[in-house]
Image (cartoon, rainbow, N blue to C red; front, side):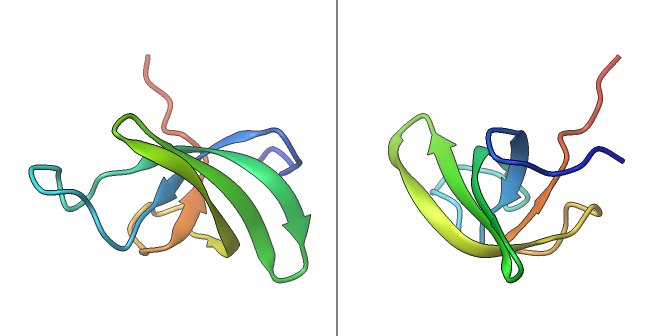
Length: 75
């Protein structure tokens, strides 16, 4: 598995989604800071200005809310 570092692209699983979006929606995010408590992410959304999310923990299952994981590979 790749080492996490500032500037890496990851997926963020939000606790809330906008009306009309899938309840399992993921957001593109960029790692802004790596701390012992977790990551600080800059989260992107096409219709909402970006925001920072702090102390985000890893969950590679992609199911835990308010977590991050590596983007899924598509062939």
